[in-house]
Length: 392
View 1: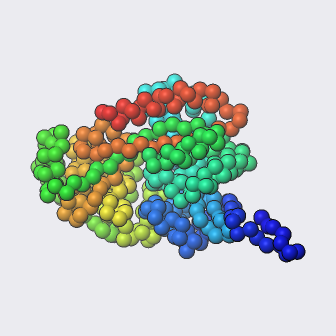
View 2 (view 1 turned 45 degrees about the horizontal axis):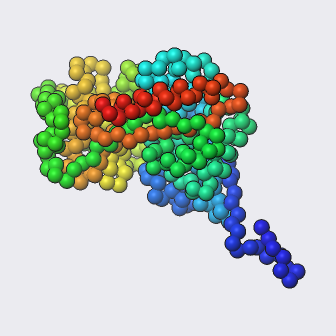
View 3 (view 1 turned 90 degrees about the vertical axis):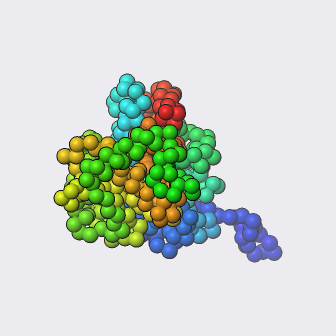
């Protein structure tokens, strides 16, 4: 805005000019500008993480640049998704999945039948981090409206903001005021490492199911599994964990090609070598039968991928030993503050000492969508499911 004084046009210093711009690639923002506005947002907003995953994902990235007085002050990452994208980024597939877990098959069927998979989704690739972590509060309403308009422009079924956290309640309220429909989606689980734990036995003594945990870990040890920690991905280890994850995904009804997994791990190794930490369990012959890949994030480690061989007789003993028990031992020894275990398997993770934090989604459906008419039933079913997960 301008004012006229003495025949001259001058800018009013009390007025700030804001601008929102869509760009299709993180390189159009630039490394320096990106780092300036995301430095406190955590590992999943790192330039390397976003850049590597935008190449690996079978969907198109978009970024909403937020500027004040021609200076970048924030950014919101989006994905244009369709049926080929990973289900956890596709609102229709995600809602069908969580409604199935919520024992609401009729609602899951209605979503499947009435909500096309194409959508514009604000989400951080492969990270349960809020996509609004780098969105200033004063931009929230504009970002919500821009996302809805962009989804309509592209002819998509909805605009969505996925995996908002408990710290995003103000943002969720702004999105609701802008016409978005909200719901809890899932719980993710974090195991805080307490100062009084001097060893694994100390951890077990503080847990309600400590006896069960000791039994599982001792059985794992008696079966001759050898544990190793790796802070770099050799070619051989990369091939092994990609294959084991591929088998694990197929067993759980998810599909991705082995070639895609190889490529993703190679990108990760190249872009973020210092942030990788892998625990493996090998049998008495030295053959690796299971692994978990963690990402280092300050004083925390985040479980990111897992794989277990098909021929392991009791996969639960192996799984909990390499995803919880051995990481607890490692964390105590190396001063790790917390282990982020991710969502799903709520009862099992709670029984092993983890605490829940809720994840939310907000959705703006196309005007002719039938979903909005039965959304209250969807939200009620999912809220009840998350409440049960928290209290088990």
